Length: 233
Image (cartoon, rainbow, N blue to C red; front, side, top):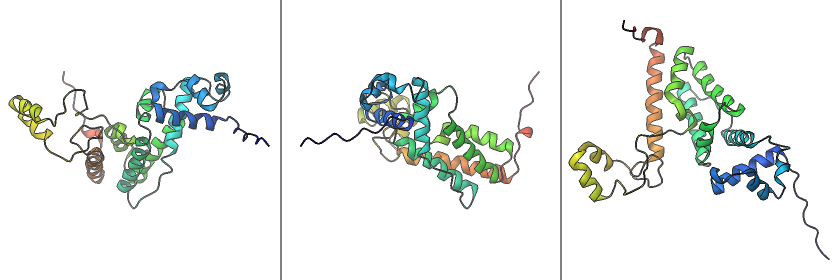
């Protein structure tokens, strides 16, 4: 007796988006296309357009899927611990999808999930005693770090590794302080900051510096009104 194949799950917007996220995780965002996604789902490409109008809407939905993994904000004993936990939760979600930061930065307008996440971080500052003015500058200072990623000065570039002794000797003759810094620190070959750096440690180190500095400004009742330089005539 021939067993009938199990019925295929009906196509839905959620199924399309989750399949697109999985495909981007497996092959990279550049390999993602509506045709490739349709093949993955076992449907004709036109079937996808009943659930996403175009590639841009697909990408927006994928961003919201990833940001949905962050979960709701969890109030902490103080604003600093709550904001820190929120940002590190975002970092954990985005690290699971290496393409996501690139796509988030490419979107012409924030998606609903991005707006919701941003609103939650702003809310933690405001309910933590920050003025609207200081919150505004805090969000500028955090920049993309609010979502758990940042572009660093020491980007990885093709060619010989900076840790190569011959490279370091040549570098030290002309750039002694760069060479000195290149030999210091913990090693993490998979770091997005660069070989020789512990990516997670460096991220948390910079985040803590910002949060500590913001707490000092909050305690002093800092306002940007008294900090602006008078334009020279």
